Amino acid sequence: MSHRSCDVFIAGAGPAGLAAAIALRQRGADVLLVDALRPPIDKPCGEGLMPEVRRALTNLGIQLEPHHGTEFTGITFASGQATVSANFPGGTGIGVRRTTLHRLLLERATELGVRFSWNTPVVLRENQPPTLAGEPIHYQWLIGADGAASRVRAWAGLEAAQLRSRRFGFRAHYRIAPWSSHVEVHWGPLGQTYITPTGPEEICVSAMTRHPGVRLAEILNSIPVLRDKLPNAVPTSSERGCLTLTRRLRRVTRNNIALIGNVALLGDASGSVDAITGEGLALAFRQALLLAQSLEGSNLAHYESNHAATLALPQRMASLLLLLDRHPSLRNRTLRAFADRPALFRELLAVHIGHQTLPHFLLRQGPNLAARLLAPQPPFDPCFVRESGPTNPPCTDRI
Image 1: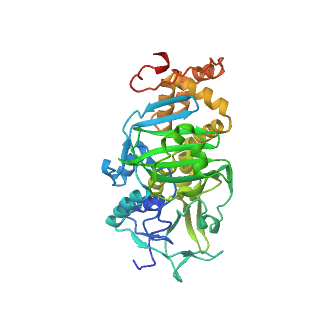
Image 2: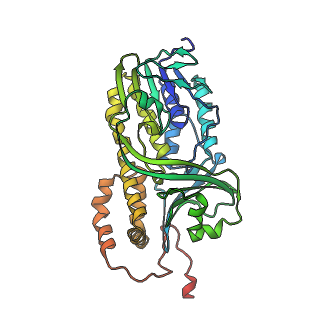
Image 3: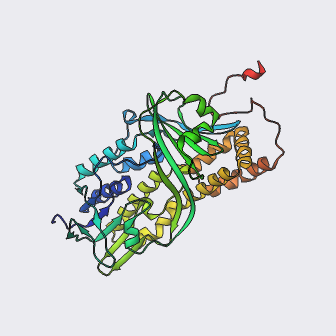
């Protein structure tokens, strides 16, 4: 094929676009991937990849090894005086720098024969076909993987959406040995902070807040345990920020548009969940595999009809976690209920990573959890904090 002709033209070479290119090449499509930037392409994110993300990457031919980052075994939630932890029911996650992940995806795409055009913005004009460096592009399918502010989405007339939440996110790295084998989520008065190990002497710190004008340092200072742990940690990257949205589009595809052809959206361009869920990359990879399957059968309707299912559970989890963000008293009661019955938290984590369905969890544990949330709360006991892992040492307040 000529340089400007392809089966699939993908605008946006972040993880979503690269994953789609890989999945499509594995099925034999000729793919041209274009981005206005040059690699490595970075973006603020928590950098913790759950076990199911590692499995999705394996399906794309990418094996994440311990030397690519630092593995973690579970999740810890902490809010004020309540803490609860659980290990993953199967496999381990891994904290990987976003630039390292991008490099691995790019190497795999190159190995498979994906064609690239870097530092070349796509020109999109209303009711006109796209051009690249002044030349028209000939394709069967055009994929918009160009992020939350997608220009492809606007150009294709797919902007109709329901915006459910809008918050502000930040990310930085610090040189300090990880103090936990878990990703820690700390809740405070200004928002949530994720602590993810990304190396033997490095952590990724990401934070989300509803409050405009608040920055990362203020969020960290509002959480005493982090304020105490990080005062002397040396930053190893500059602070970066972004918007984090929960958004559902009315449609993510258009068929046979005059002068435009067939268009599909992918990743954040196709809808998103608040970063509190840690599901952004998992969603992108699931959608990339679904898209490749759909286009192999020349069936955009299959992608359209199944795309909503990829967002359903993450958006429900986002709604739950944002409810806890807005109501500190409910959050603390919930975490204390989980701490009192760690099996509840283990099962909820299993739902989050796809090992159990939400209806099954609610059928089994919903009445139990509701009863605990509605029960009178005892005075705080400093020895109340429990984990689902090995037994904690005796509480020093009772020695």
